[in-house]
Picture (cartoon, rainbow, N blue to C red):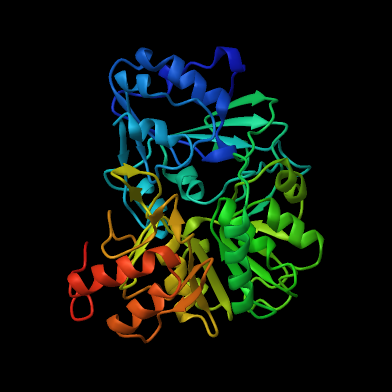
Length: 428
């Protein structure tokens, strides 16, 4: 029987056992009342326990709390960077399509699931609200499911209906959801967006990553018509494009007429727009990131950012200067899906430089998140390099042409010195 508990009386130690793994939704989906109570009561658990957290926008998780908590995540983005820099964050380096299975079973299995849900509708159905993705299978596999029912959370349509019997505990709250960190686009981002827009045709279905650059790229597609969306995450720009009639999903070969996503990573703009909006449907990661599903979508265009790309096309989207800043994430899932899609385009975007340092490099300074065998079109502010079907020497020429002009000579010499035109060692 479901227990209803007042927020001030929530006792985490009653539900979390020593050695358990506790997980919750990321970004705006964090059930803050529950997570802050867990951190405040961490010593009451008795012994160490683990937390799996996606990207975190709040200050709930602090390095000092590692005195009782083992922190785990798939990413080092947003406020997870504080944990990473303190050396207390352990990374699960998986493709996003595999994440829900890892959390539902095996060594990374989640024992206690915290959820933020919207209040029930007229039929008594609760909604997973802003984030469905890897949470969906955990509702059925976690030993304990605790729901924070937030009356300010939007009610959204998803594949997994919920009722009170799905929860062991319900805690009712009323609090605003956190907004995405604000980022500004500059001339470099706008130039990249222009190059991407020139590659796309009307009727394409878009997957786009998160952050200033992907959002700018999306905004740059406003001149197109009848675009579709099938993405891991959607933000405020998707709401704007849908309201303006740019995104209609009218030509999608599956899920026609509906924007498909796993989670929202934006502000109250997308939250208000998605509330009880049947033109947006949320799905589990096993659907949004499945290359077999993506291959069924004609003109599927995957647009993802990178930290650096080497001259043969290897991509690092995880670390820079020894700091873990990104994630393996879903880029490779989407790129492979786009390759299999009829008329699909796998696109990687990045500025040519970070400060004065080139982001097109002779040799990767971190893990290879996407191997060169899967790389396709690389776009900087200086143009697009289509690597499909090119030999290593031709790839070098194409990537040199979109590097920053001040870096091209040094990169060319480094390529010759490392004998990149003949051979190049894969880093894996």
